[in-house]
Figure 1 (cartoon, helix red, strand yellow):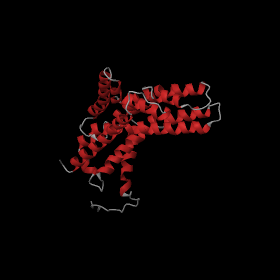
Figure 2 (cartoon, rainbow, N blue to C red; figure 1 turned 90 degrees about the horizontal axis):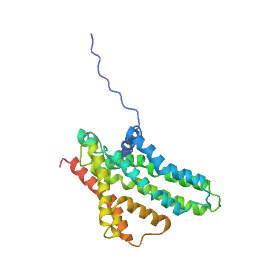
Figure 3 (cartoon, rainbow, N blue to C red; figure 1 turned 90 degrees about the vertical axis):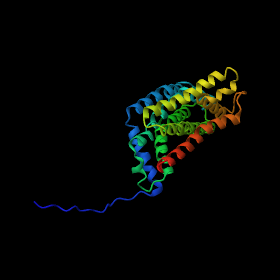
Length: 273
């Protein structure tokens, strides 16, 4: 019986540009996450509990235009931020931890893939999932309110809609860097998920304890600091006890520092240190 020779055929597909290889990672994450039962449950519950009530209220309640006070009460109620926090903890928990557990970095970086592309792919995939709860539903609620308004001042309502979209984009991004940071320090996704949520929960407890001595400590809690920022951005109002610079610095710190830690940690991991 003869032996058939192995024949190699040239691949006829198109190669992805080096600067777009993060897109493959992001697309894979999105496909995987939207099929995950845990993620789907959070998305459905989050939409029902954080958005549906206000959606119905805007439809049934007569209103002349989309008011920033209504959107501030809706987005700053706390339910929206809590579900965003939970979703980020679940979505980011295995993005890096599973690669650490399976030593997949060898496969990733065997190609011409840089650390920043790897991080960008993971982050973009997580952001796409987060946007399904944090970006598109608030925009939908604002659009429905505009469609059902009785007045004709659509320019004013459009301004509020744009501010709502920016807030949704901020919340979409806000929790992801911290979740990735926790995920890159453990090989178990359960630890990463619990660690991410508990870290923010601990900050809320610390804020609650120290706010008994000074209300300025309220901004240490991500839930409260975001709610204050929403009100400031939409209504132009901020509590007298809150320092604007400190508020911006805390929110920026919780996004920029974790992102820097992830980059440093993965760079060291890739070179074997």
